[in-house]
Image (cartoon, rainbow, N blue to C red; front, top):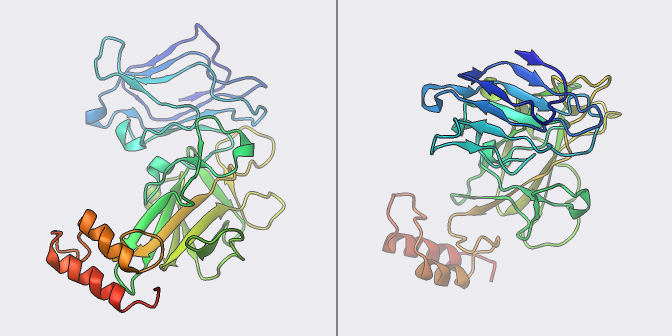
Length: 302
């Protein structure tokens, strides 16, 4: 199904089972969705939103979602829910059919990413509704074995994406954990796969992401560059790059209990306060305490 227009108030739409196609709302200079869309399919039977709803498809407005909701289930159903907060809702796609609602330009859907991220606005001047400021310097933290690395990150958007150019449509930078200031130059050696597993909203970025560092992943969004990510399925007369999101990953070793990039006596204290399985045998016990203690003893961090 392909729908084009602005959904005004008192224009409710009901879909009996699944929305499997594309429903497109041009912005037309106003908010695109001003009444509810109900999808009444059985979510336990692979029904629901399996396709794509596109808002502000012609990229003519900077306004938000509008007053409408994307609602799953009838009003009398105690399990009824809707996507919120808008426009950058937190609901994972797996909970309502696997599809998405994307406002052009498409933002990163952190709940669908792997590893799952936490939605924050790193630049408070952008005024993105519903996004809070990052206080920790990272959105995702992963712990790896000593000498190990985190292999890849899959970034998923609220709408389908395409690559322009043959090079990398993203950059990866890193800095020491706890350092303030410049992330440095983009790192070489990172490769990517568009649409991994057939997900048209995704790009997988392959590392290595080695410890102990904070990593910053950003899309290239300047249409004047040779390589960038653009929004697919829009009605805009020219390419619309994806929104300039960022995804921050902290990688540390398992024995770094405090996750500050250092192996130091405080990690032993932290383990005693909150025992953690660092040997990956499924149990937090004395073997893990010995593991942390030996890692700290052999460390040059203190």
